[in-house]
Length: 66
Ligand SMILES: [Zn+2]
Image (cartoon, rainbow, N blue to C red):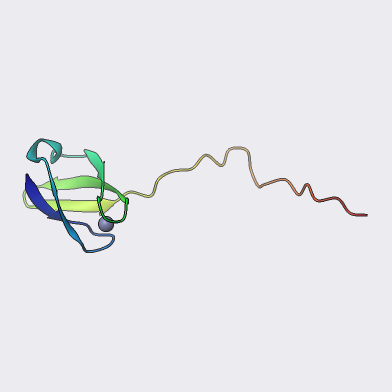
């Protein structure tokens, strides 16, 4: 296990060395941020903004005017 620091919450946690390859993604065990390895040597992690599907556009205004 290798100790890494979460760029989101700043906490350190251990993860398997095998998981630390370029562009691999895993979750911080403290804040559940999705992290991605953007540099292997030296190890650099970045927070991934999880994409959400907004192809449906804005939420419908389904309240009813009376
Ligand atoms: Zn974190």
